[in-house]
Length: 165
Image (cartoon, rainbow, N blue to C red; front, side, top):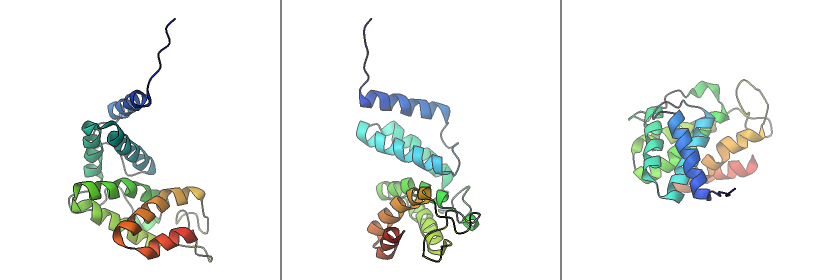
């Protein structure tokens, strides 16, 4: 019996094809998993040099953020750190495409962080519905976005806040 080994790129292409086949362009909703999937596909497309995957990511982002930067499916009043996870890919799209909608969308997420409820020690509540609860997942959801935003926009206060978190 002959053994077949896939390269990391072959395996990545297979996973990307499966995700794209199961989720038509523009059908993913505003959710932290969407941010994880789209950023992973974006990074893979860069490694593989595959523009079709980038186009797929952009098609979803365009459905999630309208031309005016309004975030479709996002609810500011939830103060939910999970909601910030999509900012990671939106920030990257804005930097690459120079499409202003993404900067506006990221500014909304940044504004959420400035108003996010906190513990007495200054830690972010994970969600408004979980008063005084800090979750490690919340750090994953917001910290990479916060640091990248802070570095790109000269927002040292936000970067410092991540270190405090």
